[in-house]
Length: 45
Picture 1 (tube, rainbow, N blue to C red):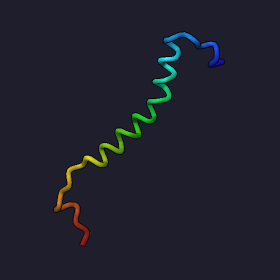
Picture 2 (cartoon, rainbow, N blue to C red):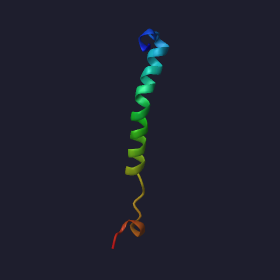
Picture 3 (cartoon, helix red, strand yellow):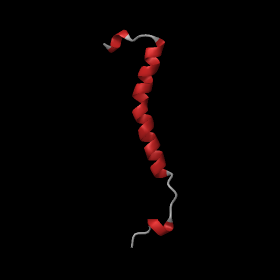
Picture 4 (tube, rainbow, N blue to C red):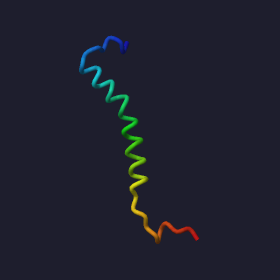
């Protein structure tokens, strides 16, 4: 069923469909890694 979609538009949308989960996961990892480090909230005693 997907093999009939051989146009350039179909290939572009197929690549976007495959890359969207990777972009979302990368954005979540970036947000977790780029959080500001607050010493008041970050210390565990």
